Amino acid sequence: MSTIAVATATRSSRLGLRATSEQEILLRKAAHVSRKSLTDFILDSACAAAEQTLLDQRLFLVSGNQYQALLDLLERPEQDNPGLARLFARPTPWTER
Image (cartoon, rainbow, N blue to C red; front, top):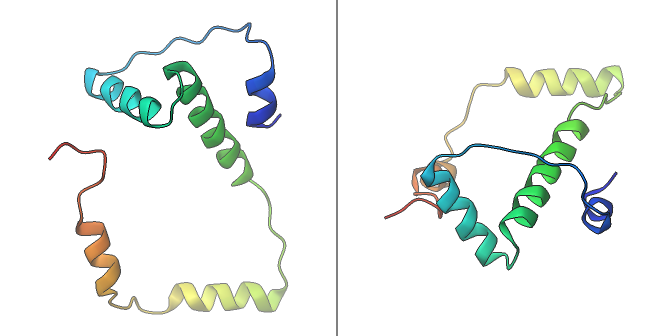
């Protein structure tokens, strides 16, 4: 069932979770910016992550040539990527500064 269908259905199940105060603050900020209730934000985010996790478990069939090309790419030595290094060095938008 997609996230959209879940959002329009009547909610009858109850979920409970514990969070640190930092996690709660982060979730409340994100819900506020998204103009959603905390419950809607958490459910939407969790369902999207669950769907992606399940989609990642799919089997992909490729030809022998395609598979060998992938293996060849994976075996190549790593290359410097200064732009990517700068990106990963930046603080995340949700961390306090």
